[in-house]
Amino acid sequence: MEFRDLKSQYQKYKQEIDTAVTDVISSADFIGGKEVKELEEQLADYVGVKYCISCANGTEAMTLLMMAWDIKEGDAVFVPNFTFFSTGEIVSFRGATPVFVDVDKDTFNIDTKKLESAIVKIIADGKLIPKVIIPVDLFGLPADYQEIERIAKQYNLLVLEDSAQGFGGHINGKRACSFGNAATTSFFPAKPLGCYGDGGAIFTNETELADLLNSLKVHGKSENKYDNVRIGVNSRLDTIQAAILKVKLKAFIDHELEDVNRVYRLYNERLNGIVKTPYIPDGFYSSFAQYTITLTNKKQRDQLQAKLKERGIPSTVYYEKAMHKQGAFTYLKVDDTDFETTNSLCDTVLSLPMHPYLREEEIDKVCEVIKGFCLHQNQAFLLTKF
Ligand SMILES: *Cc1c(COP(=O)(O)O)cnc(C)c1O
Image (cartoon, rainbow, N blue to C red; front, side, top):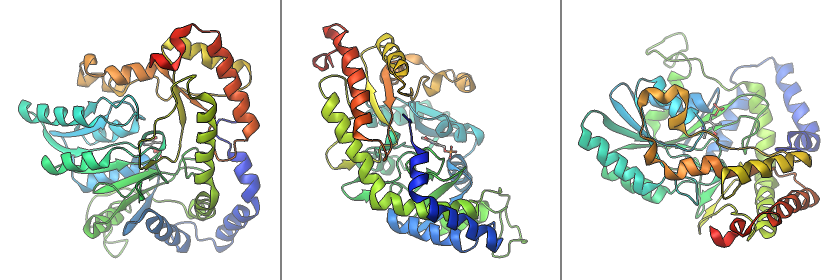
């Protein structure tokens, strides 16, 4: 069984993908060109924003925004504590200070009450200037943007939606990658919409910001690429990756997004009442980058993972280590007691095989192992205890 089955997807779309790749090679147009432009238009159209700016990967997408907004030493950027390293890394990379915020125990996304307290505290301390909030759409579920946008407005902060895992999700029809001042996504192969290498994109409705980003990603170019008006970077999406993504975007829209949601429902039907299953609030739709269950403690989680492995079922712990515990962030000297939920999730979460090509027999097999394991555990394991 595959954790995320990219091979079945390729077999299904082999002919179209092979043709798309060969066409790019035959045209010898490897950087930029028609494929990249068409992909950007299709992505912007799907998400429902004016501009899509493709780039080298999801981390660079966020770094480019930090550059465009001139985030620097002395600035505070609010980041969930339970996320992939990248979300905090790009802040420190600019010399600014990431302020980690605990997450909600059910959605796993940034806790908006704690976010507001963190902002108030930074203002009261007077050492850093609050500038940006970076909510993450963790495991495919959009963060609580209604509340986040209210807070951003009240404290005059920018919002960068880190939707590396969230492409395809929505809140009452408003799609992920359309929230905040700008949003970013990643096309890393295992993300909801992945390419065959690294890739990323930025989304925004702001014309000036889009122009600035298009300049920054190509060495600070002006209209002319050999007239450099600012210091930038080289961060482009390869034409071959764009051609592959065009085929995969169509599959994603045609059926893959619905298929992962079907897998989610099948898992939930079998696991509800056995373990804590993913919580999707009313009006929210997830793109299920991960299907993550929560156990009662670390020992049970680790034992279940070992049991699944014994039966040939892959599973992963996203994330074992809170951001504030990462060695690279020890310099921030963060107080561990502020992160009750994150610390507990790091010990208890387990992500199961999840992808649009997962078959019902496979889902049955995974769930039987989990049920068998839980039956052997004491009563404390039952959902009534959550
Ligand atoms: C994957 C990921 C990124 C980084 O994307 P890359 O394309 O690998 O650079 C950033 N944030 C989150 C939440 C991610 O999951």
